[in-house]
Image 1 (cartoon, rainbow, N blue to C red):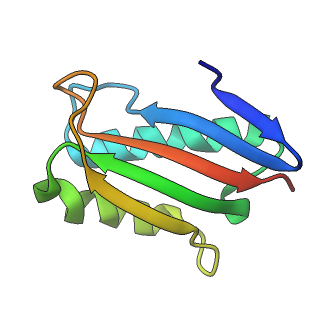
Image 2: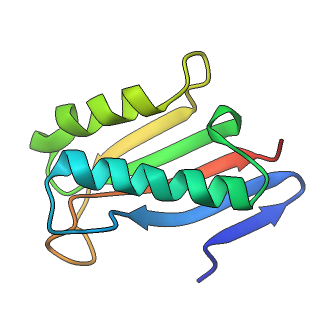
Image 3: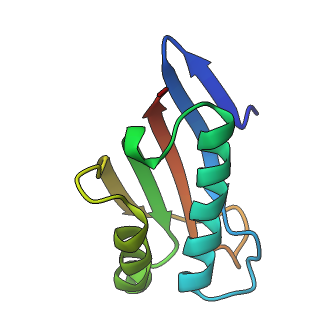
Length: 105
């Protein structure tokens, strides 16, 4: 699996999860998005160049808390197309995962 794939000016990030899966949805979402920031920077992109995001949550009861962190993280006027679905995770302690597509700067 590649963490970052670049093709024709596009950046594709593999699914990112929390740094510590033993935390609540708010902390898991924040550390997951922190990882996205790092990977986008490594790929020559940033939040303002995101085109789409797919967010997977283990339980939709956590949607509002996850979404509050997401809304604070996305730059105003630069929200990507987004889907959010409930999904079974690779490990039961994981509450959220994200895949991102962005343009290079």
